[in-house]
Image: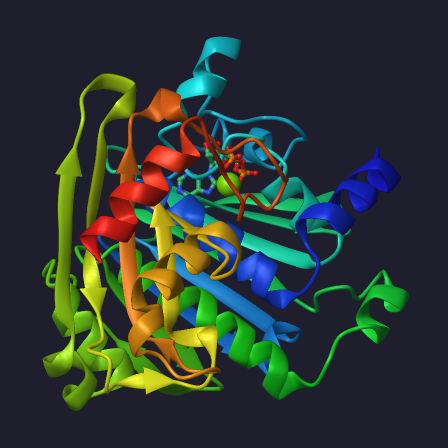
Length: 319
Ligand code: ADP
Ligand code: MG
């Protein structure tokens, strides 16, 4: 079972940033309003994600670390209308099979919380504890028992940068949630969670960029053809030499800033752009839940639209 979990872990947990992504998604699924991410040693030494979400009951905390135990899907039909970020029940067991994990959690109506310790997939202890409502998951010494995986990682700075990029993505996707990122004990950024996307952009990219961005907005169609676009995009004189300032979200899921959607944005911009320059853009797409398939890859950073040409044309026109 441990080996099966380690193999699954290879798909879900490629690097420290994948751990951060899964833990942040769980916090969001738990309805958190405030999420604090702390990273040490490029995320290999420690990644801690603290949330004020619904918590996990003492009876269910071990189950949360069992393979394919998800509280989020109730029938096969739900796969076609996924509203949560997680649904496979693979992340926590995968992470726990390749690290030392401490989960401290309490549901609001329980007097005491619980602290569960797992290392290399084995439960070490489960004790009652006093703690705030919500969940804190600490992941230490990632890949300590899979040295080959550890070998393949890039520098600490690269891994920290990848984690920072993930947390920034979610801060942009969820302006109504407060995100803090602490790197080696220093606060890197903190968003207020007051719902203002432009304020998030100011915190992450600076005041000048935040002020300059223009709104992008459209809402078209009904039922499965409903598409809503919301976001901010830079004017043509404000471009960047890399795509790392392009953020796309589909039904609140962060997507890779490449592929068809990036092409739509860049084409809409084309006449004004010099080669190798990219707009700064944060694009939030919403479609009917039945018109999107997120079940493409375990790390879920790709989606399939049921009507891609329609989505692309609404986005292109909005820009
Ligand atoms: P999935 O997100 O696909 O359901 P995970 O392995 O990521 O699978 O998590 C397993 C389960 O543990 C979740 O379905 C949820 O019930 C619970 N869980 C994980 N993280 C949290 C959290 N931060 N707050 C509340 N519940 C959580
Ligand atoms: Mg999850």
